[in-house]
Amino acid sequence: MNSAYSDGTFYAINHRYNPFIEESVRDLPCGKVADFGCGTGSNLYHLMKAGWDVYGIDRELVAVEKARTLLPPAQVFL
Image (tube, rainbow, N blue to C red):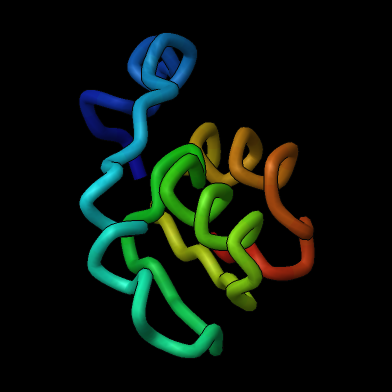
């Protein structure tokens, strides 16, 4: 599937994460979380470091490949 993101340019420069995600789960016990459209996995990476069992799904191969460098590769799906 080709899209505006398929060439990898967006994912090469986008390393931001949303700190609101960490804040919103701060008082919850750690568990499993799935991010549909996880992109490069930066949001999941911060949750994983906080103790969450993370799973990422994205439709862009470039994004999945990058997310697999941050997260357990078997937990990131195309």
